Length: 142
Ligand SMILES: [Zn+2]
Ligand SMILES: [Zn+2]
Image 1: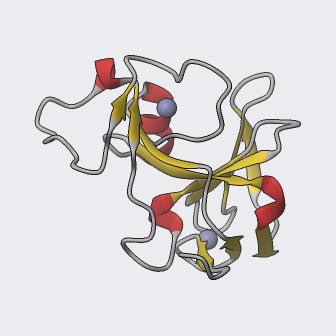
Image 2 (image 1 turned 180 degrees about the vertical axis):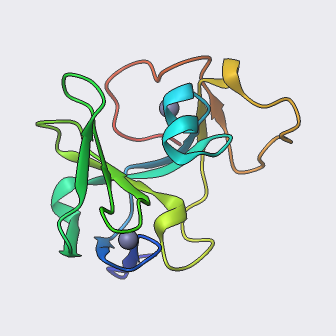
Image 3 (image 1 turned 120 degrees about the vertical axis):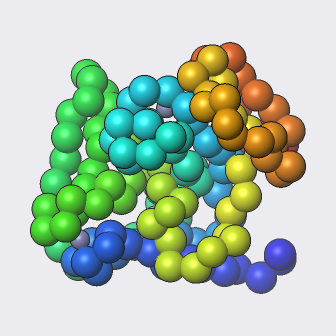
């Protein structure tokens, strides 16, 4: 894909909307309890974009401070988790289930595989697996 492209998404009721431009730095899955619980799902699925490549519209989302820097944003009307962004970070974590179309971003890495559900099959697009968090400061994954 050499053309600039955009992908839209938002919460289930449509009050919180976003547009992400271009390609994410990386797309992954996380099996940690934070991701599981904030989505109410067996794992979290996200695409990490440069913050200046994402625009928001509609209602102001609610914010939950998970940790000193960790922020989790959700729709105050329908409760859907929509994105995460650490305080001061130049990256935004868009939850891939919030995009309007399927098959936009396939995960290439998995985090916290020590918490991975035993019934989950291997995911063919994944090429790197971390026992817990990612190691190192690199922005991209293969
Ligand atoms: Zn909503
Ligand atoms: Zn996680």
